Every structure is written in structure tokens, then in C-alpha cells.
Amino acid sequence: MEHVGDEMTKVLNKNNWNERLDELVKEVLADPDVAAFISEHQDELTDEAIHKSYAKMYEYVQEKRKFKLNEPNMIAPGYEPKLFMNFHFIDVTYVPTEELLQKQAEQSLRNRVKAIGMQKDIREATLESYEPTVEREEALTAALEFIEEYPKNPKAFHKGLYLQGSYGVGKTYLLAVIANELAKQGIQSTLLNFSEFAVEMKRAIATNTTGDKVDAIKKSPVLMIDDIGADFMGSWIRDDILGVILQYRMQEQLPTFFSSNFSMEQLEKEHLMVTKEGNEEPMKAGRIMERIRYLAREIKMVGANRRNP
Image 1 (cartoon, rainbow, N blue to C red):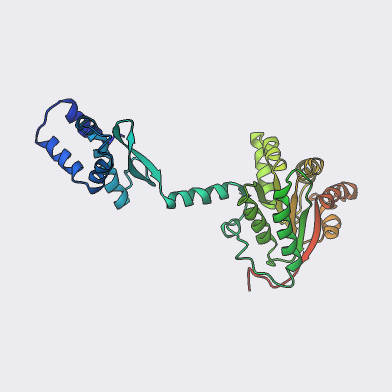
Image 2 (tube, rainbow, N blue to C red):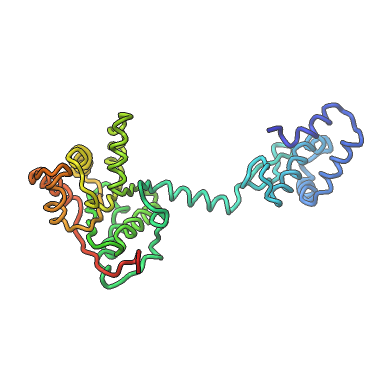
């Protein structure tokens, strides 16, 4: 993009004080902000310095007009032009607006929560919008304790939560609340729907990227595995994907959360023990559950279905 001040610069370089240049100079000097700036810095400015600063002042006037009209062809959208003294000359800089800073702060928060297969409303969950009830009091209290304690000493082992309950009682939403509250304190989390993640892992076989994806998940500072047990999993997903992730997190003592319609006992006996292929493998299921029990404590959540009230 051609610089805004180039039009005046070209005229000045020709040293041709024609009618067009006179119009540009009058437009610049008639601007109240330019006039006020020159008056404020009159002790620092010579006539020659003002003359050599016309191109920058012209750029300021033009970009200020675009900024006020919110035109898309600004040099720096979202940034307000400001005049400043650059040694003994007038220059223009661009300052981010409060609106832009707010958007950047919100985006920074969102970037701290990696969501895989999660709905938009879940990703935007807030503590203020979480409805406390007697049935959900234990889970909410445990969540608040983690939000408060983990940032104080993130290198220590903090046990996560295994939220168990029927559909729609707020398990997933509470996990998202925890992730978003941690994001406000600069802590990164990964929140994934396990069924969607399993599908993604199977697709990654074709591109030979399963190892990279598993590494990224298993090393997340805080990991939240949502809806584990929703679909039958093959032995490969159970042992080589889930097992590897949980083993690493147990060894490194990284906080890990789960949500499930199954209790821990049901998950082991009714889900993990029987593979998608129909084989019963109690020892392998037991190893997975040993890691889950080490990483998280079970809390039962009950209440009305908030998805379909």
C-alpha cells in the first residue's frame, strides 16, 4: 500500500508550490489537532521543521478522518493516529484503541484454552453463568478449590476431578469454567471431547501424525477429557492413545480431569474391559483405571437435564 503521506512528499520533492500543494498545506494546518500540537510544541519547532513535517501531518489528518469513519482502508485498523515529536520534527504514530486491546485480551484468553470437538457455548463458559445448586455443590466447591490452589504452585501435583452424572447436568460446562478461569491467570488447558479426539486420531494414521498429536495432548499443562465412555473404543485407542496419554500424565503428575456418564467402576467393567471388537480384557482395563484413579477423584453430579429442560 502506498504511504498516505507520499502524495504530499512527491509535491514537496518537486519544490513546486503550486495550487494543489497550497490546498494540501491549508488542509493540514486547518486541522484543530494539528494546530494545537504545533502550538503546544512551538518552542521546539522551526518553520523549516514544520515544512519538513507536512507529509507526516497530512498522513495524520487523512488517517484520523478514516479512523473516525471506521473506514477499512486505514493503514492500521484498530489503531488511532497520534502526533508526537520525533527529535525536532513532527511524526505520526498509531495507538491501539481500548476496543482493540479488549479484543486482543479476549483472544489471548481463548488461545489459552485449546478446545477439540467442543461446542461454542461450552468454550465460552463463565463462572458467573454457572448455576449453583445443592446437587452440584460438591463439584463446584472442588472446582473452585482447584482454580484457587493450582496457580499458587503449578509444579506440585494437584489431583483433578472425575465428574460423573447423567446427560445435561453440567459436567462439561463445569470443566470449561475451570479452563476459562485458569486462562485468566495465564494457564493453558486442553479441553477435548474424547469421541471426537478418537476419530481425529484414526484420521491421523493416514498422515502419520498420531505421535505428534498425542504428544501435544499428553503434555498439556491441564488436560480435560470430556465424555469418556460415550462410544466403545477399540484396543488401539484405549491402549496406545488413551493409555499413553494417562501414563505420561501420571508420571509427570499433570492435572487431568474427566467427565463421564459412567461411574469409575462402570467405566472399567462396562466400557473399558470390553473392546469394540467384543474382547474382554480386564487387566488392560484395570491399568487404565489405575491411572484415572491416581489422576482424579470421583464426584457424582445429579440434577435436571439443562440441555433439554
